[in-house]
Length: 233
Image 1 (cartoon, helix red, strand yellow):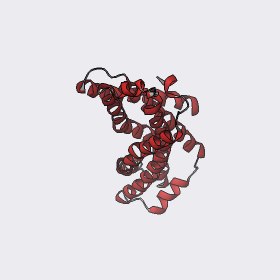
Image 2: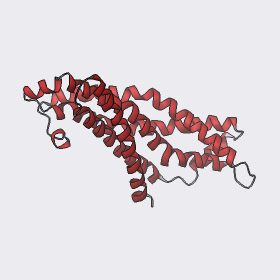
Image 3: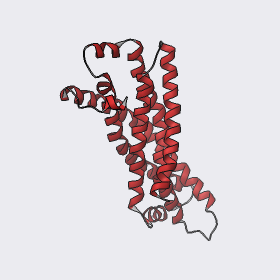
Image 4: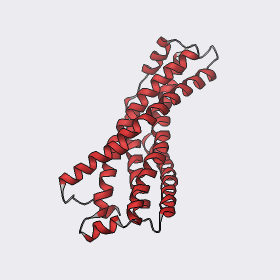
């Protein structure tokens, strides 16, 4: 399927039109859920960290430091990838699957259109381009949520901000962006595969959508381990 997908678009204008539509459906429509989840994840992580660092031997700025490291290294890229696998992945699989069972894909192929490239390539490009933007937004909103959580836990703003800046390693952000880019490709390609090869009727579209979410999530977790081992170990 990927061999058919990664072919040069026959009409650039049509490709960019589809690409812009996918940016809106996949990227812009995910801003709301990413913002809400990131804010509350950051708040919960900071409160739990403050609860576990109640001992007076620990400086208060460690709450900000631990919150930053947790969000950048694991919570934002991996948790959001799993959530977006459910939202974006199921959307992609159900959309392409519906086109398959209603014979719209067959009609494209009869007209000589490369259906895989026409339908799937814009989705892959949109996810790979927009997911890193979402993850930067997620980290920012998560740190704001962490600051709000610290206020409820009695940690001063000065201590929290000092912890955020304490021994910052810029490579961790690069590592986070690499992970989310790989996850974006996995989610879009696996979901497209299950949608593209759907057989049957409406019930089979639902099954393909479920399989897309399950398999995408499993592969994301496997690659999370592999990338962490390769880049950080």
